[in-house]
Length: 143
Image 1 (tube, rainbow, N blue to C red):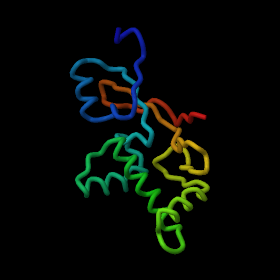
Image 2 (image 1 turned 60 degrees about the vertical axis):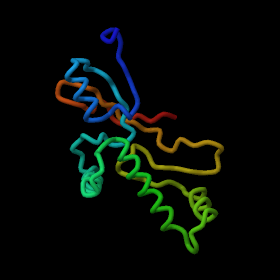
Image 3 (image 1 turned 90 degrees about the vertical axis):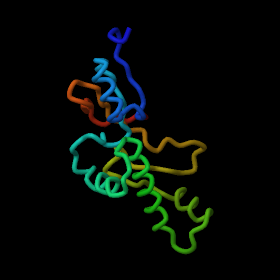
């Protein structure tokens, strides 16, 4: 059954331990979406993230990029507030936000008045191969 279809899973499977296990079992070909620049890539956009997390002894994963990007966005929003930082002023700053570009994301982060949000609808696909995780697509954006 594994060989009869292409298998796709979510970002949480994009880890060093998963590729090690897949390689040991010979179960290659699995596709995983990376919501950010694939963390095993040698892209220069990852340099500051790698340095910061390595210095803090935090595991390098796609999910840790999410935390890093979230913290950067929060700091940008907090720095935009003129006056006291309160729940109300932070909420207003997010609601008034046009967009924040981040080099680790495939599209700008947005927020607003809608009843629901999916501010990061971009992914790049990686695939489990004999050589490790390999990036196999450019950014794909879901409408």
